Length: 488
Image (cartoon, rainbow, N blue to C red; front, side, top):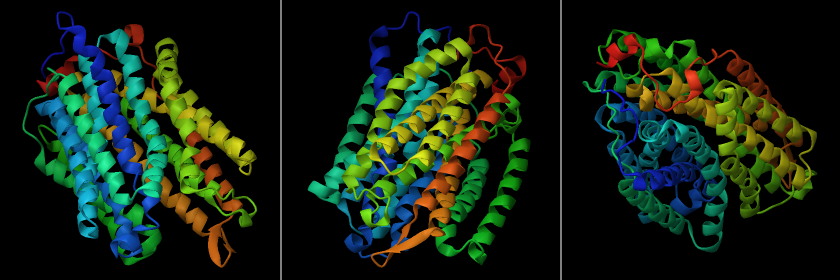
Protein backbone atom coordinates (compact mmCIF):
# COMPACT_ATOMS: atom_id res chain seq x y z
CA UNK A 1 0.00 0.00 0.00
CA UNK A 2 1.20 3.48 -0.76
CA UNK A 3 1.42 5.25 2.62
CA UNK A 4 -0.91 8.11 3.43
CA UNK A 5 0.75 11.51 3.46
CA UNK A 6 0.63 13.35 6.74
CA UNK A 7 -1.73 15.91 5.28
CA UNK A 8 -2.05 18.55 2.61
CA UNK A 9 0.62 20.74 4.16
CA UNK A 10 2.81 22.35 1.58
CA UNK A 11 0.23 21.94 -1.17
CA UNK A 12 -1.57 24.92 -2.63
CA UNK A 13 -4.80 25.41 -0.68
CA UNK A 14 -6.49 27.34 -3.50
CA UNK A 15 -7.95 24.19 -5.00
CA UNK A 16 -8.93 22.51 -1.73
CA UNK A 17 -12.09 24.56 -1.38
CA UNK A 18 -13.60 24.14 -4.88
CA UNK A 19 -12.95 20.39 -4.75
CA UNK A 20 -15.67 19.89 -2.12
CA UNK A 21 -18.50 21.68 -3.99
CA UNK A 22 -17.36 20.14 -7.28
CA UNK A 23 -17.57 16.64 -5.82
CA UNK A 24 -20.89 17.45 -4.10
CA UNK A 25 -22.28 18.66 -7.43
CA UNK A 26 -21.29 15.33 -8.96
CA UNK A 27 -23.09 13.47 -6.14
CA UNK A 28 -26.27 15.49 -6.66
CA UNK A 29 -26.10 14.78 -10.40
CA UNK A 30 -25.79 11.06 -9.72
CA UNK A 31 -29.01 11.03 -7.70
CA UNK A 32 -30.79 13.27 -10.22
CA UNK A 33 -29.93 10.84 -13.03
CA UNK A 34 -31.47 7.96 -11.08
CA UNK A 35 -34.80 9.74 -10.49
CA UNK A 36 -35.48 11.90 -13.58
CA UNK A 37 -36.92 9.02 -15.57
CA UNK A 38 -39.59 8.17 -12.95
CA UNK A 39 -42.19 10.81 -14.07
CA UNK A 40 -41.74 9.57 -17.66
CA UNK A 41 -42.55 5.91 -17.02
CA UNK A 42 -46.35 6.11 -17.53
CA UNK A 43 -45.94 7.83 -20.94
CA UNK A 44 -42.84 6.03 -22.28
CA UNK A 45 -44.76 3.10 -23.84
CA UNK A 46 -46.65 5.61 -26.00
CA UNK A 47 -43.56 7.72 -26.74
CA UNK A 48 -41.30 4.80 -27.68
CA UNK A 49 -43.79 2.26 -29.02
CA UNK A 50 -42.48 -0.30 -26.51
CA UNK A 51 -44.35 -2.40 -23.97
CA UNK A 52 -44.66 -1.35 -20.34
CA UNK A 53 -42.44 -4.31 -19.38
CA UNK A 54 -39.69 -3.16 -21.75
CA UNK A 55 -39.95 0.42 -20.50
CA UNK A 56 -39.48 -0.73 -16.89
CA UNK A 57 -35.95 -1.79 -17.86
CA UNK A 58 -34.99 1.87 -18.07
CA UNK A 59 -35.07 1.79 -14.26
CA UNK A 60 -33.88 -1.79 -13.83
CA UNK A 61 -30.85 -1.33 -16.12
CA UNK A 62 -29.59 1.64 -14.11
CA UNK A 63 -30.17 -0.17 -10.83
CA UNK A 64 -28.35 -3.34 -11.90
CA UNK A 65 -25.42 -1.65 -13.63
CA UNK A 66 -24.97 0.75 -10.71
CA UNK A 67 -24.94 -2.11 -8.21
CA UNK A 68 -22.37 -4.02 -10.27
CA UNK A 69 -20.13 -1.10 -11.17
CA UNK A 70 -20.00 0.63 -7.76
CA UNK A 71 -17.68 -1.89 -6.01
CA UNK A 72 -15.79 -2.58 -9.24
CA UNK A 73 -15.06 1.09 -9.94
CA UNK A 74 -14.32 1.66 -6.26
CA UNK A 75 -11.63 -1.02 -6.35
CA UNK A 76 -10.30 0.35 -9.65
CA UNK A 77 -10.09 3.80 -8.04
CA UNK A 78 -8.04 2.43 -5.14
CA UNK A 79 -5.66 0.77 -7.60
CA UNK A 80 -5.39 3.14 -10.58
CA UNK A 81 -6.37 6.56 -9.25
CA UNK A 82 -9.66 7.78 -7.80
CA UNK A 83 -9.82 10.98 -9.86
CA UNK A 84 -9.28 9.06 -13.10
CA UNK A 85 -12.07 6.60 -12.33
CA UNK A 86 -14.34 9.39 -11.06
CA UNK A 87 -13.99 11.26 -14.36
CA UNK A 88 -14.73 8.04 -16.24
CA UNK A 89 -17.95 7.52 -14.22
CA UNK A 90 -19.07 11.11 -14.85
CA UNK A 91 -18.28 10.78 -18.56
CA UNK A 92 -20.36 7.58 -18.86
CA UNK A 93 -23.22 9.27 -17.02
CA UNK A 94 -23.11 12.24 -19.42
CA UNK A 95 -22.86 10.00 -22.48
CA UNK A 96 -25.96 8.13 -21.31
CA UNK A 97 -27.94 11.38 -21.15
CA UNK A 98 -26.86 12.40 -24.65
CA UNK A 99 -27.87 9.01 -26.08
CA UNK A 100 -31.28 9.26 -24.39
CA UNK A 101 -31.71 12.77 -25.83
CA UNK A 102 -30.90 11.59 -29.37
CA UNK A 103 -33.02 8.45 -29.57
CA UNK A 104 -36.54 7.11 -29.00
CA UNK A 105 -35.52 3.49 -29.59
CA UNK A 106 -36.12 1.47 -26.43
CA UNK A 107 -32.96 -0.62 -26.94
CA UNK A 108 -30.78 2.49 -27.14
CA UNK A 109 -32.56 4.05 -24.16
CA UNK A 110 -32.02 0.97 -21.97
CA UNK A 111 -28.34 0.81 -22.98
CA UNK A 112 -27.94 4.51 -22.22
CA UNK A 113 -29.56 4.12 -18.82
CA UNK A 114 -27.19 1.24 -18.07
CA UNK A 115 -24.27 3.57 -18.84
CA UNK A 116 -25.72 6.08 -16.39
CA UNK A 117 -25.54 3.42 -13.69
CA UNK A 118 -21.79 4.03 -13.55
CA UNK A 119 -22.59 7.29 -11.77
CA UNK A 120 -23.42 5.32 -8.62
CA UNK A 121 -19.67 5.08 -7.99
CA UNK A 122 -19.31 8.88 -7.82
CA UNK A 123 -20.18 9.18 -4.11
CA UNK A 124 -17.84 6.47 -2.71
CA UNK A 125 -14.99 7.65 -4.94
CA UNK A 126 -15.55 11.25 -3.86
CA UNK A 127 -15.62 10.31 -0.18
CA UNK A 128 -12.32 8.49 -0.57
CA UNK A 129 -10.79 11.50 -2.35
CA UNK A 130 -11.95 13.79 0.48
CA UNK A 131 -10.33 11.54 3.06
CA UNK A 132 -7.03 11.57 1.17
CA UNK A 133 -6.95 15.28 0.35
CA UNK A 134 -8.49 17.22 3.22
CA UNK A 135 -7.05 17.85 6.68
CA UNK A 136 -8.77 15.88 9.47
CA UNK A 137 -10.67 18.86 10.84
CA UNK A 138 -12.48 19.33 7.51
CA UNK A 139 -13.00 15.72 6.53
CA UNK A 140 -16.04 14.99 8.72
CA UNK A 141 -18.16 17.89 7.46
CA UNK A 142 -17.12 17.30 3.84
CA UNK A 143 -17.99 13.59 4.02
CA UNK A 144 -21.35 14.43 5.63
CA UNK A 145 -22.10 16.90 2.83
CA UNK A 146 -21.12 14.33 0.21
CA UNK A 147 -23.40 11.72 1.74
CA UNK A 148 -26.37 14.09 1.87
CA UNK A 149 -26.13 14.77 -1.87
CA UNK A 150 -27.87 11.44 -2.52
CA UNK A 151 -31.09 12.67 -0.89
CA UNK A 152 -30.74 16.21 -2.22
CA UNK A 153 -30.41 14.97 -5.79
CA UNK A 154 -33.34 12.58 -5.41
CA UNK A 155 -35.51 15.42 -4.09
CA UNK A 156 -34.47 17.72 -6.95
CA UNK A 157 -34.71 15.13 -9.72
CA UNK A 158 -38.47 14.54 -9.63
CA UNK A 159 -39.68 18.17 -9.81
CA UNK A 160 -36.93 19.08 -12.31
CA UNK A 161 -37.95 16.26 -14.63
CA UNK A 162 -41.65 16.97 -14.19
CA UNK A 163 -41.22 20.68 -15.01
CA UNK A 164 -39.17 20.02 -18.16
CA UNK A 165 -41.52 17.27 -19.35
CA UNK A 166 -44.63 19.34 -18.70
CA UNK A 167 -43.44 22.54 -20.37
CA UNK A 168 -40.98 21.31 -23.02
CA UNK A 169 -40.57 17.59 -23.93
CA UNK A 170 -38.92 14.47 -22.61
CA UNK A 171 -35.88 14.66 -24.93
CA UNK A 172 -35.19 18.16 -23.58
CA UNK A 173 -35.00 16.67 -20.08
CA UNK A 174 -32.08 14.48 -21.15
CA UNK A 175 -30.39 17.41 -22.92
CA UNK A 176 -30.60 19.32 -19.63
CA UNK A 177 -29.11 16.43 -17.64
CA UNK A 178 -26.46 15.94 -20.34
CA UNK A 179 -25.45 19.59 -20.06
CA UNK A 180 -25.34 19.36 -16.26
CA UNK A 181 -23.26 16.20 -16.53
CA UNK A 182 -20.77 17.95 -18.81
CA UNK A 183 -20.54 20.82 -16.31
CA UNK A 184 -19.91 18.35 -13.51
CA UNK A 185 -17.21 16.60 -15.53
CA UNK A 186 -15.41 19.88 -16.29
CA UNK A 187 -15.66 21.00 -12.65
CA UNK A 188 -14.24 17.73 -11.36
CA UNK A 189 -11.41 17.78 -13.88
CA UNK A 190 -10.49 21.34 -12.87
CA UNK A 191 -11.00 21.22 -9.10
CA UNK A 192 -10.04 17.68 -8.06
CA UNK A 193 -6.43 16.50 -7.78
CA UNK A 194 -5.42 12.91 -8.24
CA UNK A 195 -5.09 11.23 -4.88
CA UNK A 196 -1.58 9.92 -4.09
CA UNK A 197 -3.00 7.01 -2.05
CA UNK A 198 -2.98 3.78 -4.06
CA UNK A 199 -3.26 0.04 -3.45
CA UNK A 200 -1.26 -1.29 -6.40
CA UNK A 201 -1.68 -4.81 -7.72
CA UNK A 202 -3.42 -6.83 -10.41
CA UNK A 203 -7.13 -6.18 -10.87
CA UNK A 204 -9.29 -9.19 -9.91
CA UNK A 205 -11.12 -9.72 -13.22
CA UNK A 206 -12.56 -13.09 -12.18
CA UNK A 207 -13.86 -11.58 -8.94
CA UNK A 208 -15.47 -8.68 -10.84
CA UNK A 209 -17.20 -11.08 -13.26
CA UNK A 210 -18.41 -13.31 -10.44
CA UNK A 211 -19.79 -10.40 -8.43
CA UNK A 212 -21.47 -8.99 -11.55
CA UNK A 213 -23.15 -12.32 -12.34
CA UNK A 214 -24.36 -12.84 -8.77
CA UNK A 215 -25.72 -9.29 -8.40
CA UNK A 216 -27.43 -9.34 -11.80
CA UNK A 217 -29.28 -12.54 -10.86
CA UNK A 218 -30.23 -11.19 -7.43
CA UNK A 219 -31.38 -7.73 -8.52
CA UNK A 220 -33.23 -9.00 -11.58
CA UNK A 221 -35.18 -11.38 -9.35
CA UNK A 222 -35.96 -8.64 -6.82
CA UNK A 223 -36.88 -5.96 -9.38
CA UNK A 224 -38.86 -8.18 -11.79
CA UNK A 225 -40.53 -10.52 -9.29
CA UNK A 226 -43.76 -8.50 -9.28
CA UNK A 227 -44.07 -8.67 -13.07
CA UNK A 228 -42.84 -12.21 -13.70
CA UNK A 229 -44.43 -13.76 -10.60
CA UNK A 230 -42.56 -14.49 -7.38
CA UNK A 231 -43.19 -18.21 -7.74
CA UNK A 232 -42.29 -18.40 -11.44
CA UNK A 233 -39.47 -20.63 -12.65
CA UNK A 234 -37.51 -17.59 -13.89
CA UNK A 235 -37.56 -15.81 -10.54
CA UNK A 236 -36.82 -18.91 -8.49
CA UNK A 237 -34.01 -19.81 -10.92
CA UNK A 238 -32.52 -16.32 -10.61
CA UNK A 239 -32.58 -16.47 -6.80
CA UNK A 240 -31.00 -19.94 -6.81
CA UNK A 241 -28.40 -18.80 -9.35
CA UNK A 242 -27.52 -15.74 -7.28
CA UNK A 243 -26.99 -17.85 -4.14
CA UNK A 244 -24.79 -20.34 -6.01
CA UNK A 245 -22.74 -17.74 -7.89
CA UNK A 246 -22.20 -15.52 -4.85
CA UNK A 247 -21.19 -18.53 -2.72
CA UNK A 248 -18.58 -19.51 -5.32
CA UNK A 249 -17.53 -15.86 -5.56
CA UNK A 250 -16.93 -15.74 -1.79
CA UNK A 251 -14.70 -18.81 -2.01
CA UNK A 252 -12.77 -17.27 -4.89
CA UNK A 253 -12.35 -13.97 -3.00
CA UNK A 254 -11.02 -15.74 0.08
CA UNK A 255 -8.41 -17.54 -2.02
CA UNK A 256 -7.44 -14.62 -4.29
CA UNK A 257 -4.15 -12.88 -3.61
CA UNK A 258 -5.61 -9.45 -4.53
CA UNK A 259 -9.38 -9.81 -4.06
CA UNK A 260 -11.90 -7.36 -5.43
CA UNK A 261 -13.50 -7.21 -1.96
CA UNK A 262 -11.50 -8.08 1.15
CA UNK A 263 -14.06 -10.38 2.78
CA UNK A 264 -11.93 -10.93 5.89
CA UNK A 265 -11.91 -7.19 6.49
CA UNK A 266 -15.61 -6.93 5.58
CA UNK A 267 -16.46 -9.64 8.13
CA UNK A 268 -15.13 -7.60 11.06
CA UNK A 269 -17.99 -6.18 13.17
CA UNK A 270 -16.75 -2.62 12.61
CA UNK A 271 -17.28 -3.06 8.85
CA UNK A 272 -19.99 -5.73 8.55
CA UNK A 273 -22.48 -4.01 10.85
CA UNK A 274 -22.30 -0.62 9.05
CA UNK A 275 -22.85 -2.51 5.78
CA UNK A 276 -25.90 -4.25 7.23
CA UNK A 277 -27.20 -0.96 8.62
CA UNK A 278 -26.72 0.64 5.19
CA UNK A 279 -28.99 -2.01 3.67
CA UNK A 280 -31.65 -1.43 6.33
CA UNK A 281 -31.47 2.38 6.12
CA UNK A 282 -31.61 2.18 2.30
CA UNK A 283 -34.84 0.20 2.65
CA UNK A 284 -36.27 2.60 5.23
CA UNK A 285 -35.39 5.76 3.32
CA UNK A 286 -36.62 4.62 -0.10
CA UNK A 287 -40.23 3.96 0.91
CA UNK A 288 -40.65 7.69 1.54
CA UNK A 289 -39.56 8.56 -2.01
CA UNK A 290 -41.63 5.78 -3.58
CA UNK A 291 -44.89 6.47 -1.80
CA UNK A 292 -45.14 10.22 -1.18
CA UNK A 293 -45.56 11.36 -4.80
CA UNK A 294 -48.05 8.56 -5.53
CA UNK A 295 -50.11 9.35 -2.46
CA UNK A 296 -50.53 13.09 -3.10
CA UNK A 297 -51.22 12.52 -6.82
CA UNK A 298 -54.01 10.01 -6.10
CA UNK A 299 -57.42 11.34 -7.22
CA UNK A 300 -59.64 13.01 -4.63
CA UNK A 301 -62.28 10.36 -5.28
CA UNK A 302 -60.16 7.92 -3.26
CA UNK A 303 -61.07 9.82 -0.11
CA UNK A 304 -57.44 10.48 0.80
CA UNK A 305 -55.73 11.64 -2.41
CA UNK A 306 -55.04 15.31 -3.07
CA UNK A 307 -55.12 15.13 -6.88
CA UNK A 308 -51.84 17.01 -7.30
CA UNK A 309 -49.97 17.15 -10.60
CA UNK A 310 -46.65 15.39 -11.24
CA UNK A 311 -44.87 18.68 -10.54
CA UNK A 312 -46.80 19.15 -7.30
CA UNK A 313 -46.01 15.61 -6.19
CA UNK A 314 -42.32 16.13 -6.85
CA UNK A 315 -42.31 19.46 -5.00
CA UNK A 316 -43.61 17.72 -1.87
CA UNK A 317 -40.20 16.03 -1.59
CA UNK A 318 -38.25 19.26 -2.14
CA UNK A 319 -38.34 20.47 1.51
CA UNK A 320 -36.79 17.15 2.52
CA UNK A 321 -33.95 17.71 0.05
CA UNK A 322 -33.28 21.19 1.48
CA UNK A 323 -33.29 19.74 5.01
CA UNK A 324 -30.76 17.09 3.99
CA UNK A 325 -28.43 19.80 2.70
CA UNK A 326 -28.82 21.93 5.85
CA UNK A 327 -28.50 19.05 8.30
CA UNK A 328 -25.28 17.57 6.89
CA UNK A 329 -23.05 19.88 9.01
CA UNK A 330 -25.22 19.07 12.05
CA UNK A 331 -24.55 15.40 11.44
CA UNK A 332 -20.82 16.07 11.26
CA UNK A 333 -20.92 17.94 14.60
CA UNK A 334 -22.81 15.10 16.30
CA UNK A 335 -20.30 12.59 14.95
CA UNK A 336 -17.40 14.71 16.15
CA UNK A 337 -18.90 15.08 19.63
CA UNK A 338 -20.52 11.67 20.17
CA UNK A 339 -19.12 9.47 17.42
CA UNK A 340 -20.67 8.34 14.11
CA UNK A 341 -22.16 5.23 15.76
CA UNK A 342 -24.40 7.49 17.85
CA UNK A 343 -25.26 9.63 14.83
CA UNK A 344 -26.25 6.54 12.84
CA UNK A 345 -28.47 5.21 15.64
CA UNK A 346 -30.13 8.60 16.13
CA UNK A 347 -30.69 8.90 12.38
CA UNK A 348 -32.39 5.50 12.23
CA UNK A 349 -34.54 6.43 15.25
CA UNK A 350 -35.59 9.70 13.57
CA UNK A 351 -36.44 7.68 10.44
CA UNK A 352 -38.75 5.55 12.57
CA UNK A 353 -40.32 8.69 14.07
CA UNK A 354 -40.91 10.08 10.57
CA UNK A 355 -42.91 7.02 9.58
CA UNK A 356 -44.89 7.28 12.81
CA UNK A 357 -45.88 10.78 11.69
CA UNK A 358 -46.80 9.42 8.24
CA UNK A 359 -49.03 6.76 9.82
CA UNK A 360 -50.65 9.28 12.19
CA UNK A 361 -51.75 11.60 9.35
CA UNK A 362 -51.38 11.07 5.60
CA UNK A 363 -54.45 13.03 4.54
CA UNK A 364 -53.34 16.65 5.04
CA UNK A 365 -50.66 18.08 2.76
CA UNK A 366 -48.77 19.92 5.50
CA UNK A 367 -48.56 16.78 7.64
CA UNK A 368 -47.41 14.73 4.65
CA UNK A 369 -44.61 17.24 4.05
CA UNK A 370 -43.71 17.28 7.76
CA UNK A 371 -43.54 13.48 7.89
CA UNK A 372 -41.48 13.28 4.69
CA UNK A 373 -39.13 15.96 6.04
CA UNK A 374 -38.62 14.07 9.33
CA UNK A 375 -37.73 10.96 7.31
CA UNK A 376 -35.29 13.07 5.27
CA UNK A 377 -33.69 14.36 8.48
CA UNK A 378 -33.13 10.84 9.77
CA UNK A 379 -31.74 9.79 6.40
CA UNK A 380 -29.26 12.67 6.47
CA UNK A 381 -27.96 11.71 9.89
CA UNK A 382 -27.66 8.03 8.97
CA UNK A 383 -26.16 8.45 5.50
CA UNK A 384 -23.66 11.03 6.76
CA UNK A 385 -22.44 8.71 9.53
CA UNK A 386 -22.04 5.53 7.45
CA UNK A 387 -18.99 6.56 5.38
CA UNK A 388 -17.29 7.96 8.48
CA UNK A 389 -17.66 4.58 10.18
CA UNK A 390 -16.21 2.87 7.11
CA UNK A 391 -13.30 5.32 6.87
CA UNK A 392 -12.34 4.58 10.47
CA UNK A 393 -12.56 0.83 10.05
CA UNK A 394 -10.58 0.17 6.84
CA UNK A 395 -7.02 0.96 5.69
CA UNK A 396 -6.56 3.96 3.41
CA UNK A 397 -5.86 1.86 0.32
CA UNK A 398 -9.34 0.30 0.49
CA UNK A 399 -11.56 3.29 1.25
CA UNK A 400 -13.09 3.63 -2.22
CA UNK A 401 -13.83 -0.09 -2.57
CA UNK A 402 -15.17 -0.37 1.00
CA UNK A 403 -17.44 2.64 0.56
CA UNK A 404 -18.45 1.20 -2.80
CA UNK A 405 -19.66 -1.94 -1.03
CA UNK A 406 -21.52 0.24 1.49
CA UNK A 407 -23.29 2.09 -1.33
CA UNK A 408 -24.02 -1.30 -2.94
CA UNK A 409 -25.75 -2.40 0.26
CA UNK A 410 -27.88 0.77 0.20
CA UNK A 411 -28.81 -0.02 -3.41
CA UNK A 412 -29.82 -3.57 -2.54
CA UNK A 413 -31.91 -2.22 0.35
CA UNK A 414 -33.67 0.20 -2.00
CA UNK A 415 -34.34 -2.56 -4.55
CA UNK A 416 -35.83 -4.82 -1.87
CA UNK A 417 -37.92 -1.90 -0.57
CA UNK A 418 -39.24 -1.19 -4.07
CA UNK A 419 -40.32 -4.81 -4.49
CA UNK A 420 -41.91 -4.99 -1.02
CA UNK A 421 -43.79 -1.69 -1.37
CA UNK A 422 -45.07 -2.72 -4.81
CA UNK A 423 -46.26 -6.05 -3.41
CA UNK A 424 -48.09 -4.34 -0.53
CA UNK A 425 -49.79 -1.75 -2.75
CA UNK A 426 -50.81 -4.31 -5.37
CA UNK A 427 -52.59 -6.38 -2.71
CA UNK A 428 -54.40 -3.36 -1.26
CA UNK A 429 -56.26 -1.67 -4.10
CA UNK A 430 -59.77 -0.37 -4.80
CA UNK A 431 -61.49 0.58 -8.04
CA UNK A 432 -61.75 4.35 -8.54
CA UNK A 433 -63.28 5.41 -11.84
CA UNK A 434 -62.87 1.87 -13.10
CA UNK A 435 -59.11 1.79 -12.43
CA UNK A 436 -57.34 0.03 -9.53
CA UNK A 437 -55.78 2.52 -7.09
CA UNK A 438 -53.87 1.70 -3.88
CA UNK A 439 -55.90 2.20 -0.71
CA UNK A 440 -54.80 4.39 2.17
CA UNK A 441 -54.48 1.23 4.25
CA UNK A 442 -51.92 -0.08 1.74
CA UNK A 443 -49.85 3.09 2.03
CA UNK A 444 -49.98 2.97 5.82
CA UNK A 445 -48.82 -0.66 5.76
CA UNK A 446 -45.89 0.39 3.57
CA UNK A 447 -45.00 3.11 6.08
CA UNK A 448 -45.26 0.66 8.97
CA UNK A 449 -43.00 -1.79 7.17
CA UNK A 450 -40.37 0.88 6.46
CA UNK A 451 -40.56 2.20 10.03
CA UNK A 452 -40.05 -1.29 11.43
CA UNK A 453 -36.98 -1.81 9.25
CA UNK A 454 -35.63 1.58 10.38
CA UNK A 455 -36.08 0.50 13.99
CA UNK A 456 -34.07 -2.67 13.28
CA UNK A 457 -31.42 -0.42 11.70
CA UNK A 458 -31.25 1.56 14.96
CA UNK A 459 -30.65 -1.61 16.96
CA UNK A 460 -28.00 -2.76 14.48
CA UNK A 461 -26.23 0.60 14.70
CA UNK A 462 -26.07 0.34 18.49
CA UNK A 463 -24.38 -3.06 18.11
CA UNK A 464 -21.46 -1.53 16.15
CA UNK A 465 -18.28 -1.53 18.29
CA UNK A 466 -17.48 1.84 19.80
CA UNK A 467 -14.69 3.75 18.08
CA UNK A 468 -11.57 4.04 20.22
CA UNK A 469 -9.55 6.11 17.77
CA UNK A 470 -8.02 9.08 19.64
CA UNK A 471 -9.81 12.22 18.64
CA UNK A 472 -12.25 10.26 16.53
CA UNK A 473 -11.27 11.88 13.23
CA UNK A 474 -11.77 9.91 10.03
CA UNK A 475 -9.23 11.77 8.03
CA UNK A 476 -5.94 9.93 8.64
CA UNK A 477 -6.27 6.46 10.08
CA UNK A 478 -3.01 4.66 10.62
CA UNK A 479 -3.28 1.11 9.27
CA UNK A 480 -2.64 -1.76 11.64
CA UNK A 481 0.31 -3.99 10.81
CA UNK A 482 -1.84 -6.71 9.29
CA UNK A 483 -3.77 -4.34 7.06
CA UNK A 484 -0.56 -2.63 6.04
CA UNK A 485 0.81 -5.99 4.92
CA UNK A 486 -2.38 -6.67 2.95
CA UNK A 487 -1.74 -3.70 0.72
CA UNK A 488 2.03 -3.95 0.62
